[in-house]
Amino acid sequence: MAEVPELTSGEVLPEIGGLAADAPRVAVSVSLNFPGLTASQRNLMRDLTLNATRALLELGVRPVLLDATAAQLPSTEVDGFDAVLVLGGGDIDPELAGHGLHEGEYFGVDRRADEHTLELIRNAVDAGLPLTAICRGSQLLNVALGGTVIADLDPWHLHHGPSGGELFLPEQVALLRGSKLQQVYGRGGLQVQSGHHQAVDALAEDLAVAAVAHDGTIEATEHRSRPWVIGVQWHPEHSNAPSGDLYLLLGAFLSHVQPRSATVA
Image (spheres, rainbow, N blue to C red):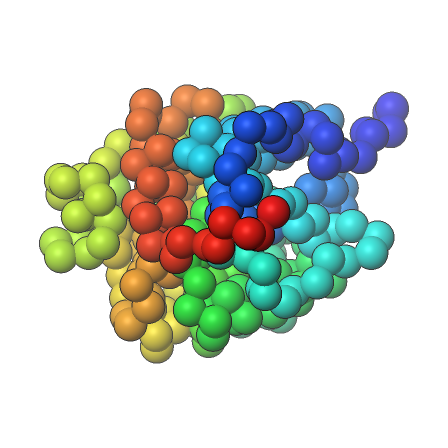
């Protein structure tokens, strides 16, 4: 089997040019090269990350990649950033996730990357920065604030495709009345693009449920007191996601960014 080349930042960051000097800086946390990365997973990570960073740039902000699998880990300090976006990837280390080992399959577990991202999330929340977390990121948000994660969803058919088949599928989620997401989308339900076998289990005390699947699985959370700390289990950055989903979510996220001084490059 041919060795899968590592993903590089140049493959997942669009060419940045023409931004104003005072453009907000958004930390984009992702685990690009998790253990056991296959060629198809590499392509997926490339496409999802590039779609997200390109959308940020189109919305007038500067994406700054923080790869939690880099040989030299980036700082988890959030000084100099205006917001944080946490993207998806492999499974969370079972001990950190609060469920211990189980008989299901794990992929991409990287405790070093988990611990780095958990610290970054806590620092961002403590600093009051706007934060959006997607899929694995949503699970890490819950763990960072004291919650746990379901090891392996059963039944699973609403949330991902069959083994050996297409991972992603359309999923219907209900947005809770009065939630920030319900206000953003202006309706009570969404069709989203999902591909997850884990999800939020015991909810962190500081989080509230914002969306659920038809089987009751928690599909989104929001912080009870912060203006914008949101986790969504689905993938708005997927190429097959409903048109506009990503830009609505990121637009609402970025509306909470505080203006920067024009003297900051």
